[in-house]
Amino acid sequence: MEHPENSDLYKGLTVNAGIDQPSSINPYFKRKVRKKQLSVNEFVDGIVKGDITILSQAVTLVESVKSEHQATAQEIIEKCLPYSGNSIRIGISGVPGAGKSTSIDVFGLHVLERSAGKLAVLAIDPSSERSKGSILGDKTRMEQLSVHADSFIRPSPSAGSLGGVARKTRETIILCEAAGFNKIFVETVGVGQSETAVHSMVDFFLLIQLAGTGDELQGIKRGIMEMADGIVINKADGNNIEKAKLAAAQFRNALHLFPAPDSGWQPRVLTYSGFYNHGVQEIWDMIYEYIDFVKANGYFDFRRNEQSKYWMYESINEKLRDSFYQNNVIQSMLYNQEQQVLKGTLTSFVAAKKLLDAYFNELKK
Ligand code: GDP
Image 1 (cartoon, rainbow, N blue to C red):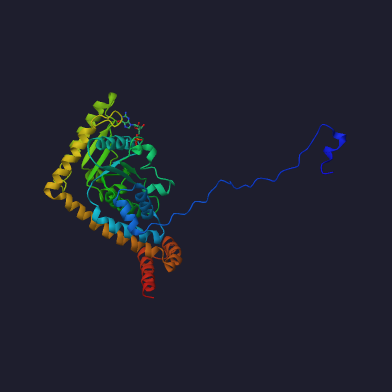
Image 2: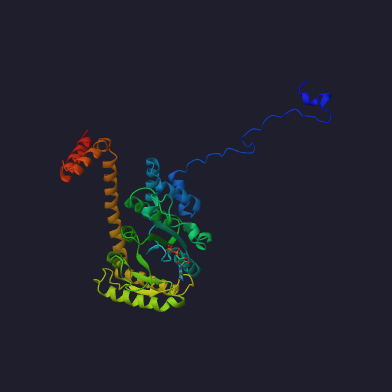
């Protein structure tokens, strides 16, 4: 008897025969047919038609560290170049909490409602590699824009040095422009070096500030202020309005002490409230006035050309650095040389020369 429980001794108790265990694999699961990788021309066609999915895929290639992805990305960028350039690029900077995401949401909606075209929001956040996941350009932070049909929001590329991250963002600008985005925001945290990177790829640099207590200008790096084409004091609402106006006056005074910018444009200081949507039109008026002004005096094209030149040298520097540090011989020597410098048995210059000589010798092989 198979089951003793079924014997007459245990009347009233029946045990059914067991059944096979079900497979642990979902029978309804269909293996995804792997989409074939698009060709460079398919990418370019898709981008130029404004296909957001294809644009996103191309940006992913730009951001990839794989060399074959990089090679494809470069081909795509080159073919998109003739379609690019037709936009206004605006850098937006401010310390965390200054209200960047709130403001970008409001500025973005404002301009999309009033003018034709599309808006891309990109970011440069060199710290994002450390924090594993970008804090900037995050869709959830821009609630209204993120669901707007004419916006494209992309967080900061996360891998690599500031220069590398910035280059990828600059290349992404080209792809977005080719896809018909005629307004580009590039966001960054107001901490220093990343501003220089953003400044090197935008037409207008907007600095968001807050009115605090006491000396408003404390803690703001002079270099950042000097880059600004416009300074806007956020949170000018409620009982903060007077403080914001006072801060604006102090910024205006400070700006007058700086040498006149090459653009010939005198940077302006405005107050606004991103949260209550006050003063936003004035900010856009300022930006458009600036663009008209620099287009008329030739500075707009001059700045873009200078930026292209800057990026040529940046790309060379980046490639040379990578080639040096990724060289096997250099990698095997580096730690030892560093230790000798730390111990004082070798000067920095001699160590550097030894390493460079070794590198150049490797190249000759
Ligand atoms: P971010 O870190 O620079 O992106 O700043 P957020 O946009 O996240 O804003 C930081 C905080 O300031 C949030 O709690 C916002 O609600 C608040 N905030 C932003 N803009 C304004 C404003 O115009 N007025 C006031 N009162 N609060 C604001």
